[in-house]
Length: 68
Image (cartoon, rainbow, N blue to C red; front, side, top):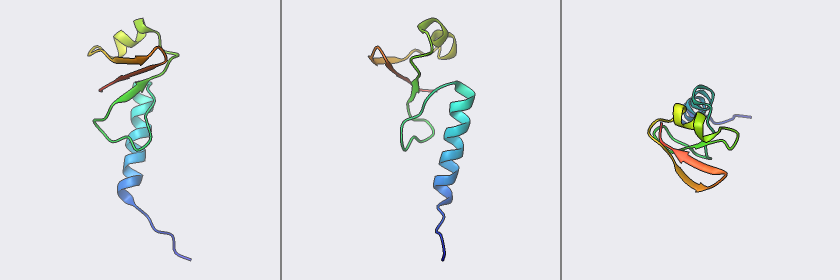
């Protein structure tokens, strides 16, 4: 039984895992490099200002997105 592979998807997932680990952020489904990332609610506004100096968009108190 053969299993198909999509190397573009494998590379996208590796990029997403590295980004999430490096920037302490969460990523939406089907995230691509250059897309918005999610700042977790556990990160305070003060810490987020240091981590993401370009600012963010606050959609809800628990949902902040930014570019990295």
